[in-house]
Length: 587
Ligand code: PEP
Ligand code: MG
Image (tube, rainbow, N blue to C red; front, side, top):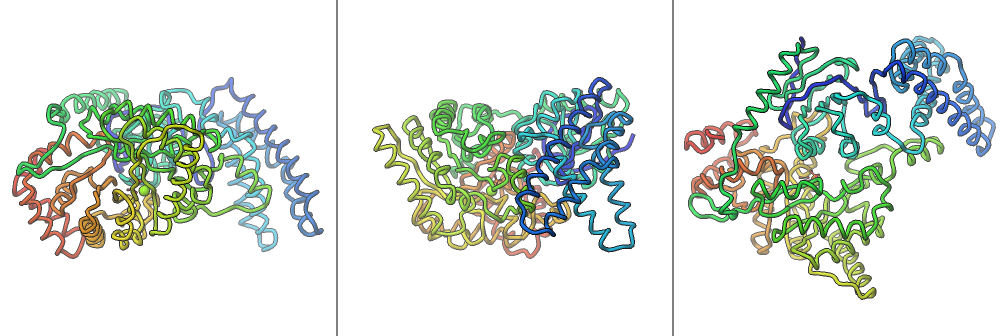
């Protein structure tokens, strides 16, 4: 039995046969039953026909002989007996899905091209990749995507992915998957956050699990220990499940239901709300001790459907239900935080791009969040109309994500005014909606005073703020170790924002994952922050930490921590200081 270790981001144990998803290459690998072979081969043939027809159309549209010749070569590849017929044989021989068989053929032919002396011929590997990409896309026509392909996997499975975007994770049938593990990621990885909402055991940051675990292998995922066991004996699986169950039963219970509002031991008011990704989790969050929903990630309402299918009416009902689920507690909805890829209905958009012959690079720093919704104004306006109408039924707030400066806030507010006018013109009812800004971009942090002057509240989204400030992509496993919440730059930036908000007398909260760590939470309280929103599972411990702590002591600890020069020094100091004062040992 081999063991891999990573970062356990969602507790519990799960075991099953590995289904491997290479998301970056858009390849899914899993074993199939003998009865499934014919259907997989038929998918290959269907992909061949669709690809051939598309390439014929492209050639007709293209001007110039040279370009046409290029696509003629691709057209020939589609029918080459070395490509699809070979993939079909592999499906039968190895009993694997069509995507994986096609990838094997591509890997083999690609290595042949690599070995060729002639540079012109070597470059034809690019054409082959293009053709294989098209065939792969046409294996799941009509934007069916991974979710539908995964439908044929036999439960129980464990998903092993290089990375797992939340939009895919949110659509999977989790009754089939006992757990998931990824090469990429950190605790603040969006899918890690989602895993905790879904109560699916998960481990991230494994670096090369997709290379080391063959599809179909039995694996055990222990999310509490951050350990993956490959081909474990049955008794090990049973033991891990029992231990996890035991931990869950004896875990820190939430004892202070009677006093929902919180104070430190020396009487300073602190407020803890919850980050919620799925509508159904709001009530769970309140049961964990949340005083409200501090962040509802509304973009997950879009997962699995084109944006225009999520109507104003549907959203109105959902936001109203959310308010009802937590009444009288407040709800803060952030407007869609998505990028272009997530907005487009995945496969369909790729189809358009492939047909046009180019790919658009994706970037988390590109057209996303408020930048995107300000361009797609009707999308934002209809969301705001739904929110304004729902606001008549409870204490609702809206916040704009990834704002980089005051102009974006002003523009977003003018869209809000337009939405209100539209509702008024219909004679429909709307309610008061407090408006906030998420501070996630360093430029917003440095101009927090300007933003505070024109909104009702600020929320520090530390997950993005840390990655933007330290220039570390939280999903890139090669640099994710540099993602450091206790970096002096981050602490100074938070201090700067806190001072700006205090000067303007505007409420400020922290809604990134940073506050879920009890020691860091103590530090933030010591720095003068008094409102937090975190993943529901972290709330019971956070409440106990706050009730036990003395603000004056924390203030002294924070003041000293802010004089230190490196994150490890700050971490060590914090741990020593809190343990010395017996503040953390029980958590
Ligand atoms: C954040 O960036 O801290 C945040 C809460 O937003 P998300 O993690 O959803 O990007
Ligand atoms: Mg963010």
